[in-house]
Length: 167
Image (cartoon, rainbow, N blue to C red; front, side, top):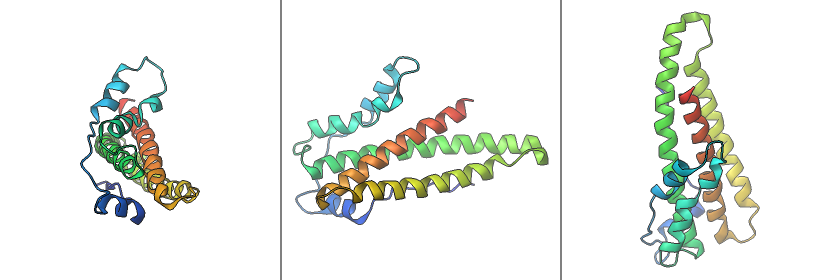
């Protein structure tokens, strides 16, 4: 059984999310991103829809344009895409397990390869987002940079996994 990851953010992001006066109710709706994806023309760049819900959240949430509000909206969409990724991984793992059972020992185990790929991808994502956040000059903005990176990499990876389930 594939182990699924949670969207884990570094201490700075957690501190922003929990700080009195900074944590607030946000107006996040993932349907904005999903509608954007649904309405895209065929062969359009999916990444143009990643972050749409977070952007609308920043506008709809009082104080959403402040770093703390931006971070909360970005984290909300990153968590949404993490859930989408996990659902897609469950489906792909079931497909791979079925194909592994049908092929027996005549083909490499797709299930094991999927688990290894996902573990490596998570390590890459976390390291890359830590690196990107480290490049931001102001510490308070690093959380938003990290969340933005996680959102985009996770959404892109989710699209890849969903494409694999369709093949």
